[in-house]
Amino acid sequence: MTISPSDRLAQRLALGIPALLLGGAYISEYGFGLFPCEMCWWQRYPHFVAIVLGLISYFASPRRLWIALAALAVVVSGLIGGFHAGVEYGWWEGITDCATTQSGGGNALDDIFNAPLTRCDQAPWSLFGVSLAGWNFLISTFGGLAVLGLLARRKTV
Image (cartoon, rainbow, N blue to C red; front, side, top):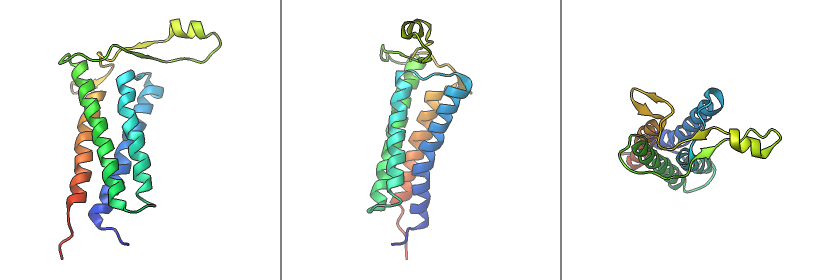
């Protein structure tokens, strides 16, 4: 079965958006030391799911269903990012858990006491006043909706 140009673009975006956003998250983490908090991890999980669903869409039918599910996972990540951004901006209360990193070198107790604390209510970085969570909200929400919009297009004869 052939795939329409809009479905092909939707498929590529459904796979590309979460892959690029996760790539950026890991570059910021391992390249620049911006360790994720608990809510940052919450945003990554739907992106992992979206990548798997996007890959499935290349091999399994119905292709459009897998693409739509991937797009919905991307939107879910965006909505979590919007909630997280609101916590960072002080618009509402967030969670109380925070994530830490472990160096893995020897003494676990020393690792715990020396691990950097990553707070969920403070943005470690921003661009134009928008935090990483805010950028995830914007890119994921609008990107996922764009994929769904492409899928909604019907080829007219």
